Length: 166
Ligand code: 4NP
Image (cartoon, rainbow, N blue to C red; front, side, top):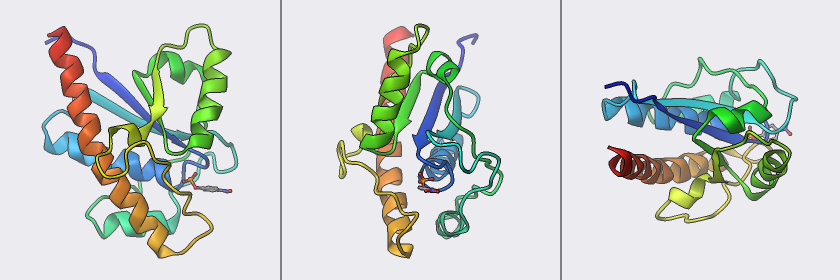
């Protein structure tokens, strides 16, 4: 099969809490489905404060408790080129989405589908994933609950897209 992989990027503010969590959860889900060679996954932040840093220790710990390892990930900032290179660029909250839409309008080659990640959720449809950075551990559990739910819907959407072109 010579089809190019479907490319997915998750975006939050700092790329140390929510989007690396989504990256890790969705990466495991894709691997478990045997699709690691057909779906490429990345994550980034709209801000630049944490570039090069590993995930927040609280996010990494909460993920590990659900058997998801995100220790290998390093923060980066989203670029205009990402909006040309990725098929889906999925924002964790409405502020991140607004930032991406501004970048999109300024990028002639942009072609990604830019939306809220929770568009693909059943239980949290079209909600923002609350920023857990300044809160307690409960916030990180909610982040994981929301991401696990939307990951299933996203994988189903990608499969539907493939069915349309196969
Ligand atoms: P994230 O969380 O956007 O989920 O990675 C945050 C991380 C850092 C900051 C804000 C949110 N910060 O202000 O440094």
